[in-house]
Every structure is written in C-alpha cells, then in structure tokens.
Amino acid sequence: MNPIMNDVAAAFNAVSVHATSISIDRAGVVLPPGGHFQGIQRMVDKAFASPKSREQELLVLTSSSDEQAYFVPCAMADDGLSGRAFSPVTMAMSPLRHAGGCQSFGNFLVAGIEDNDTNRVSEVQFWDFTRYPTQIIPMTIPRSGKEKVSTAGAVGLTSFNNGAVLAVGTYDSDTIDFYVSDGDPFGGSPLTLRLTWVTSQANKTNWSDQNFLTYQNLNLLTQVGNNLFMVGFQRSGGKDFMDLYSLDVTVVDPNDALTKVASQHMFCTDGCTFHYGGGLHALSADRFEVYAVNGDSGPYNTGTTIHANIFSAI
Image (cartoon, rainbow, N blue to C red):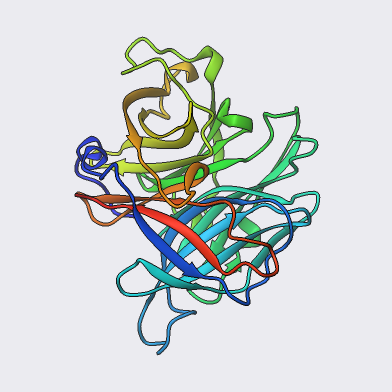
C-alpha cells in the first residue's frame, strides 16, 4: 500500500518544477522494435537485489512497440540518478501491443494494455514485484466495446476505505472509468465499475481553471479521511504540465466526480516529456516526487542510454 498523504495539495505544491537528470545504462539490452516508453514508476523489489537480503530500488518503464506491450525494470543506484536496465518483460502480444500509463501500489504494478489500431479492446493488468515480476492473471480486467471508450491508456490505483480505487483513462483520457473494491483487491476483493466520468459533460463550476488535457498518465493519491486525488501528466502547447484534481467516487452525478484544484508547469530536460511518460512516487505522508522519461532510448537493438527526469520534493 502507498502512504496515506496528510495534505495532497501541499505535497503537490512542494514538488520542484525543475528536473534533475537520470541516466540508465541500456547497453546490450535489446528492446522490441517500434513504439516508445509510455509510463514510469518507482518501485522497491527484492528479485533484482544483490545480495538478496536487501531491497532494490527500481524504475519501471512501460512501453509500446510494433509487436508487443512490455516493461523494462531498471535497477537504480543508491543516489537514484543512475541505473542499469534489465531485459524487457512481455506483457501482451499484438494486437494488445500498446502499454500505457501505470502506477505502483506497494510492491505491485498496475498498467493498461490496449489494441491501438481498433481502439476497442484493452485490459488492465496487475504485476507482483515481490519476486521476479509475475502477472497476477486472475486480477486482469478485460475491456471491450465502443471505439476509444474501451481503451486503457492511463491507469492509477490507490487505497480507499478498506479497499481501493482504480482509474482507467481511455483514449486521450476523454473518459475515465473508476472501479472500486470493498476490500483488498490483492486479497481477492473484486474491483467493480462505479462510475464513468466524461470530459465533455464535466461540471467545471468550481475548477481552478477550465483546462482538461489529453493526459498520458493518471496517478491516484489518498489523503487522510479517505479523500481522493488524481494527478494527470501531459504536454500541451510545447509545455509539460502536471494537474491536480480532487476525486469523489460517491457522487450521484458522475459529472461531479472530478474538480480541478491546481496546475503546475514543469521543466523537463534530456528529451524527456510527460507526452511520453510521467508518474509520481509517494515518499511519505507529506512528500511525493515526480518522474518523466524520454520515449526514445536509441535504436531498439543498439541503444545505450535511457534518459529520465526526477522532480524532487523540496
């Protein structure tokens, strides 16, 4: 489980808007051809640790390609600014070759996988990192239906009451499906669809501004008192933004579920951008940090370096 935040808005405002560079050695690691990185998350894992008795900090990068959806686990140095990429882990094969935005939840990773040709079929996958990354197949949420509203391009997961809330952003996050479980979803309590929020129908009366971007990544946070928040990451007008929304999954009218609270212009470096991948990691009840990644790490078979950014909690 991720930390319950004391004050999400304060933590949001305390994130530096200027990035620090991260360089990950990818030499000798061959990636599937085509596509680009789509999401980035920080995790802790023991499977990649040496010696095995200690935990290993990871950055996990989800990616699309011409043939498959996959992620790349990267073991990070103690300073968090350099690391080593491991071989890619296949999540699904074509036509589900587009892995979108993701979020870590303790030692678990949740990510959306989709067919980005028809935009009618997708699934939400859950991966266990307490050992070598293993998909928790019984938890998979299959999705299919109308074009562009059955995709899973960005997902987020956080605790809520005794269970959890899952956000699944569809094509350009024009609609977001919110699932809720009554108990621990990793203990067998199912995540069931609670409501669908539609951008064009949103009640924006109390929003801090009227802009809702085509978010590439959506991450969720929980504040004390079971107050929920969503952070969206995207590039718009040549600038990178992270936007903060309060979330209420108990509303009668789905149009009232999201309220924009704040927006922050972020300054990426090294070709990184939220258009490719962004994500957050809660450090404690008072602080979280933000990550971005460059979609291109060189040729799929000979590339040597993955560039990422960290926006530290001030």
